[in-house]
Amino acid sequence: MAMISTISSKGQVTVPVEVRRRLGVKAGDRIAYVVKDGLTYIQPVRGEENPFTKWIGALGGPQPDGTAVRFYRELRGGGEDDDE
Image (cartoon, rainbow, N blue to C red; front, side):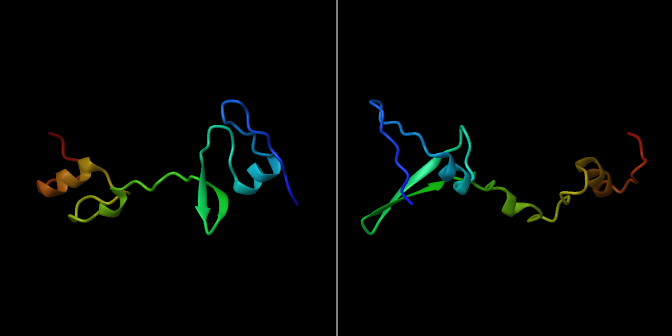
């Protein structure tokens, strides 16, 4: 099934609603045009993973479910209820 769009004088196109739904994109999202083997594909550009996520816990520090205050109190040898 072919769907047709017209290119505006500014080089803009309207992506048909069926294609937007299929790609899972909405207003403000970005799409990429990929040219491969003589064909052109469009695909959604998904947010990149936070590059620092892979380093969580690398130094044996606080885990994501803990708090920094608890971690530092434990380092100092105090309990959770200790006041400074």
